[in-house]
Length: 152
Image 1 (cartoon, rainbow, N blue to C red):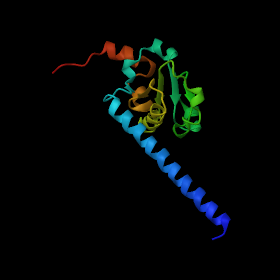
Image 2: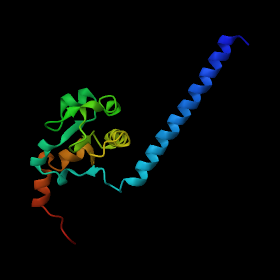
Image 3: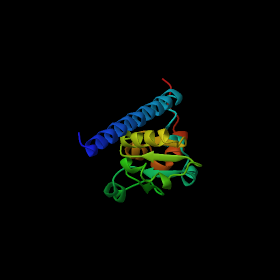
């Protein structure tokens, strides 16, 4: 066998082994996160957020730019869900980060990626923008306090 081919095979084998080790480490990190996080611990409901608290949060709209331009929560920045890790330098670790999309499913994926990457301050807006609007938007907290649930 020519020396170049042997060298190529050795490099390929080493690269494959390193990749397998990286994947195993990543799976271990995700498993550790899944065991640690409490049920619903990463979720906020619109009615839990008083209007005055929005200015203290970093709010990320995880939808695409066209949807963001059409409508978004006031003060939100747009980082598409699949790009949160690439733009993680824009995301603080020292204050609460609220991520939303239309329904909550894509923002949950973005939030999971950030949490596994070390952001323990990330929360997902339950139900996304649709539920936020339906519950009163910035006034959802005040509405919830004004209309307590009825007991039957």
